[in-house]
Amino acid sequence: MNTVAFVGMTHLGLVSATAVAAKGFPTLCFDPDWTLIERLQLHDLPVSEPGLNDLVARNGDAQRFTANPTDLRAADVLYIAPDVPTDAHGQSDLSGIHAMIEGILPHLGPQAVLVVLCQVPPGFTRQVPVPHDRLYYQVETLVFGRAVERAMEPERYIIGCADPLAPLAPAYRELLGAFGCPLLPMRYESAELAKISINMCLVASISVANTMAELCEHVGADWSEIAPSLKLDRRIGQYSYLAPGLGIAGGNLERDLATVMRLGEAHGTNTGVVAAQIANSTHRKGWAARMVRTLGLDAATLAVWGLAYKENTHSVKNSPSLATLRAIPEANIKAHDPQVPSEAVTVALDRVDTPLAALPGAQALLILTPWPEYRDITLTEIAGGLAGTTVIDPYRVLDPAQAHATGLNHITLGVGHA
Image (cartoon, rainbow, N blue to C red):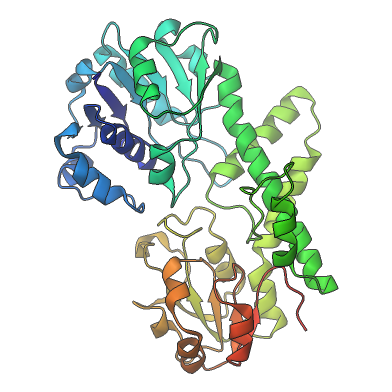
């Protein structure tokens, strides 16, 4: 089998390399940070993903970690795969990607294929100084918390090429063929924009769910009754994002909205719908804080479960939970999260080791990240631990009917409240 290398051992590169090694390809995992590589050699992984630790352990010698760039000369296919950092305004910092490409090009074999895997704006790949018959852009669609599953069983591969009608380089074709999914070759710029288009559709679904769920709250409807009817509509589909939440978070979707806004401004294209989606997300992100203030609890002791922007990740990028806590600065917060490191939290709070330890003395419980382990805590334990009776549960972690039967005032998204 051909040897495959991945450059950049952040979330994207590590998960993608692990999936390739699991298919039997000798896989080099390169990062210039020796300290990081030493951690990886000990299987001390810097990211948290269900199933990732076990898969790395099973890969054994098929997956090798190195900080020596000369090792890359053995690669037949080489991926540029670090995560691209974004700022609070959705602007990507591509300086690290440029520096990484410049640093590894002297070690690219004369017949090796270079694949840009990290997300870049339209026009980026074509400017990379590698012969175009050996240069590709591959769209990544990993999802935090489900990244291993999606890396091992991709729905399709979207491939940016200089000439979409030309055959793929043999080594690259062999690698992609091992995953048994459809291949969609297209020009570089189309592939680069395809990733943004996917995220735009996700944003549209999120915005629809949030908007209509809020109407449900005011007219006495229940969004959970409506969503199944949409999933049976072939024009929408059973896999659509139809669960209401606290706006858009994580950084990736926000980046693509900002990109479309900038492109529209540059080309005189109306992007009012995108501005509306951003405004909708900002409004919805304040839902939990508005509930706290409406109930007169903005200066009370509150238990908070979850600080990450979503379950199964340690990331707090644009976290609705932290946004909620910043909006109620007078509250006394006792918080639990199973993954978020303490240094990532910039809000004043008392961190506790278990979910139940946050409850004593609290007038209300806010479940702001739907971690699976929170579903295993009984309603009797919650009712017995809380000083008050209010549970603000936007993601419906708890069963509303059972919560009310236990004497809790359960408040969730998309349901009219008496």
